[in-house]
Image 1 (cartoon, rainbow, N blue to C red):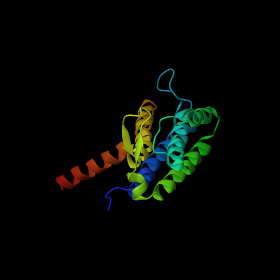
Image 2 (cartoon, helix red, strand yellow):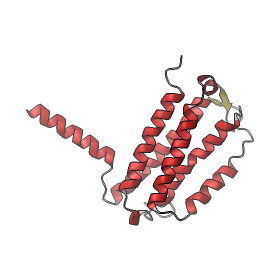
Image 3 (spheres, rainbow, N blue to C red):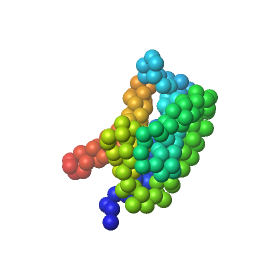
Image 4 (tube, rainbow, N blue to C red):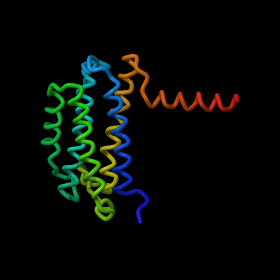
Length: 179
């Protein structure tokens, strides 16, 4: 019996995506062209990047390969880059985050513990990871970029929702301690 498997990964990924969507909803559409520094993605591009990046992990999982040596990363990567360049409204980006996130979570939820326990040799041909660890990469990738979006929120004068929730909990605890 696995203590962390497909169901747990799917649930935690859905939580991460829900938080990303909340950030997407809180940033005003007129700020979707904002970049934190020259040469970086705009808010809109970052959100689309997050939305479609899961396609690479889906391709790996659906192929059932046991090695990533020779795996064609460039085709899905170039497709994702093209998606980032498409003009979309805020509503379209939020819908893309929802649909792509749910497609990934649904796929993961249907994987067996046996499949997830299998090893995948990494592109270097010398190291390997379990399929579970490989599939966790999508969540880790999203959290990495979501932190960048939270910095963008700060630069735009928005306090991120997770920070606001923490501040509310602390204020409640302080009020309870005084009472």
